[in-house]
Length: 477
Image (cartoon, rainbow, N blue to C red; front, side, top):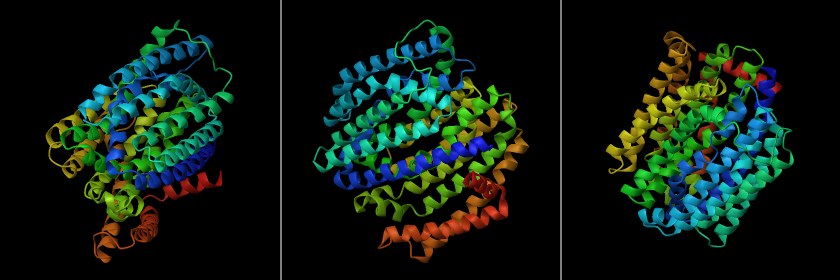
């Protein structure tokens, strides 16, 4: 990663750490104030409208980042397209809320959905400001707006949950988060920001955003399909337990991966506009990412019991059994997430859509067979889905000439070896303390984390020392 990339990673890294502290602290408090049923109702409500949440931006964000050239008429058209879709879906969800709540036999879902639609009214300007700031690589501005929104939303959720508002507390927290972040990002808006929408260039923009929408839609719908299928087949509580188990890998992708992924697409797009060959660094970035994040997920898999109980309480014991399988499935996709982000920067929207289609087709087939059994079998099935995604990603990279099969396999070997060492060490730690749930889960999880960090450092030094060099470079600059 270049010097500018290292600086951007440091800024986004600070944002990620602080946001993790805010969101994670709020989630711990809310998990103890609300019941699994109340949290499950909120999760299912969000899962039920994930399609609309994705389509409401009309692919504007990725267009603003990746477009080779951008002028004010095109920006106005992007805003107009986002307004049309966002406002239409807000009305649709508001009207359909009772029917969705009836389908899941939970009336509060209707209230959650109608509150969440408020964020759809803010979405067009939020997407526009974020996209333009990202294109301009103004990550400091994004940092301030994002953290202020996260703090305001967390305070709202915790306060209302303490007051006994149930699932509604998290819905209002989500709206406040978006409102504060939008206000600050608009105040610091880039020069190309516009207030007045238009539709004059809708044909040229839609030719790009159509594939982007399809790919993003599949990526957003896929993770929520687990909850939708399980919520209908097994009930609200099992869906909540599965969602809580998925929080372990989700925390890593939400809070640890962004220092790399959130800058990778705009960085690749910037490199292309500057005449730099972005293909040359792809394998290096994939290998580094796989050696860092996949082993962390494997370590979390071996310590999922003390982590879940220590963080969320004993009422979430049913989440322990599926958690390791979900972490392993996420670890399999580790390196290929970088390929996905790089393809976004390269403007390969159609290829991204086809990759997502292969993954989610496999997920639907798996859920159709397993969602009626139990959440452990569903979690095991996600490993097969991840293998399908990995195979499709390798085939796509080869077809695009980004790497050869030999190069890809050589890139995978270090991360697989490091994951194996970390996994064996994690299992050994669990066996030494007698298995099961430790009497002091938080202390046990922290002790295991320290030991596994040392094991990871030794494995990286043995199998891929360049990872340590790259991390030192980011820290110094």
